[in-house]
Image (cartoon, rainbow, N blue to C red; front, top):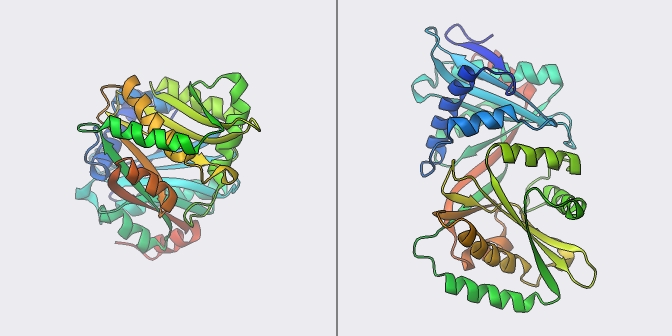
Amino acid sequence: MGSNKFGLERHEPGAASDDTIAEFHALMAADSLERRPLDPPTPVEVFTAAARNFPEFIDAAMFLARDQSGAPTGFAMITHRRTANDPHLADTQLWAKPEYRRQGLAAALLEGICDEADKKDFRTLSTTTTEGVGWGQDLCGAVGAKPTHERRTWRLPVAGLDRDQIRIITSQAADRARGYELIDVESPLPDELLAEAVELLQFLSTEPTGGAPTEGSQITTETFRQLEKAWGAMGMGRMWQFARHEDSGSLAGVLDAVWNPAISTAVAQDQAVVRPEFRGRSLGLWMKGCMIDKVLDAWPSASEIRTSTVFPNPAMDSVDERLGFVPYLRTSVWQCQVADVRRWLAAGPS
């Protein structure tokens, strides 16, 4: 498999040898450095733990490319959630060392991805590129992929942060959110909250936001517990905040905070949503402000807090800007048909 210049190996994360995992880790660390230069690389121990504890509901295959001397030159990965609403959609990631680009390496990696897709009846491929890293965007355009939506990551540096101002903003939001209470818990979620939490996260995963298509994936209590097991194996701490409507008892919103000090000094706040019937009461602002305070107390060595949203998202963008977040990077999500990639390969890409 692969071009004359490059050989390709297929591996499954849980079955790959320690040496192979180390080779993948080195390539993925270089990929991360190119896309997110402010972030330190994930330690190989954490990467290995993630590979060895892949959730059972995710189908994954990894491809390692080598040159004629046997040196690793690039990697590709294809994953599919068996709980996805679209059984024919798979996510992909691909990266090549800069010195090997435009020499047929992408074609070799894409050949492996297409072979895997054909074997498992995946017809549509999704991938993400980072603004300013042009090789990935150029490749997506060449194979006929179309951008579906953009995401923006914001960052809130801790140094110089005026926590008193954050508390004032949070207090003002709390006044507008009377009739609601906040519930603070950590993973693993308590059994008595699990079913309601999963229902709310299911809503988050399928809600159209900012014009982005909803690919959709079914979240169950079983798959959520599998994810929690994987997070724990990686040493990842995760705090949750739920807003409950006191009169009805319904969960109105959710926000999480994720940190792994072995990977980064940045805390991520990504899963944030308020149900439509409870919006307009500053719940999002209240939750995010409270979570900032909670994060800084629990994880005092964190250097910044980050959050990612579909762009544009005026309501959440306004919340983030008011709390002091500033733009960090933009990413684009693309989709293409496996048949289109096959046609590009058959045409003999350079």
